[in-house]
Image (cartoon, rainbow, N blue to C red; front, top):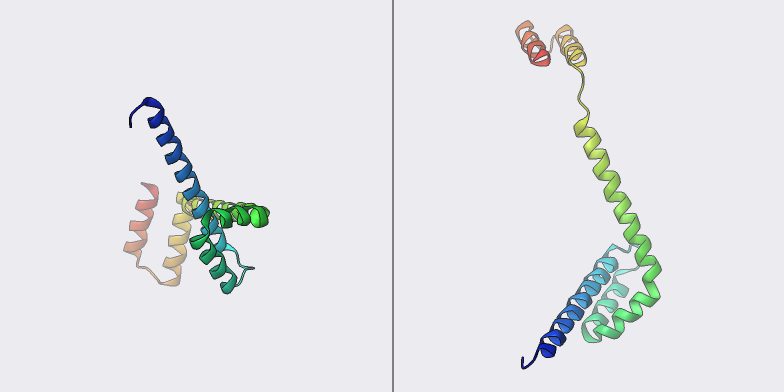
Length: 126
């Protein structure tokens, strides 16, 4: 690098290359996320992405960009719903009264001994 501007140009090329890689990985993940496209068409897209990468990426973004966005939104909504359901299931704590009532029911059914009931009761009240 002979000058400051050579360094700036080098940084611009690196930025463009990383941006291209991000687009390429987004296209590949969208290809494999799409349930409407059969395996042969996915393989054709991948082959074209390997041999004619820039043109194929542009054609894919133009031809399937709207569907790409819709699939991404659906995936994000699904992940958010799964996360919220998991958090809700983990965060739901029963009150001590509920825990004691549950232990009493087990005692009445004969599933636990009176000593185990007392241990569960003490644990719920602690």
